[in-house]
Image (cartoon, rainbow, N blue to C red; front, side):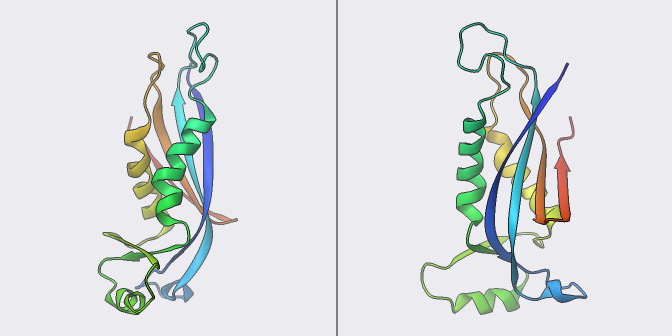
Length: 151
C-alpha cells in the first residue's frame, strides 16, 4: 500500500507570459500555492519520531520554505529571453528580488521547476520509499498545474 501526503506554502510572486495573446503578457502577480505531494510507506519502526508517518509535515514545510518560498516570495520571476521585462526590472532599486529562469513562467513550467527544486531534498526514512510524487502550483483559486514524477 502507498500513502500520500501534501504540504504547501504560499507566496506573492510576479511574472508575465511575454508572448501571450491576452492580459497575461502584462507584468502582474498572483498569490501562488506551491504544493508538494509525497508518497511512500508509513514508517513502522517502533519508537522513532516518524512512526506512523511518511515524514513529519514540519520537515516538508522547512524544505518548501527554503527552496520555494524564500526564493520566490515577493519576487518577480522572469524568462531569460524576455528582454523587455528584464530591462524594466533592471531599473528597480537595490533589494528588488528578480528570479531569472530559462523558461516562460507559466503555472505548468513553474510546477516542473518547483518539483526539481524540492525533489533532491526528499529523503526516505527507515526504508519507507519516500518520494516526491507530484508538485502542484495554484496560480489562482480556479487554476492549477501539476508536474508528476515519472516513477
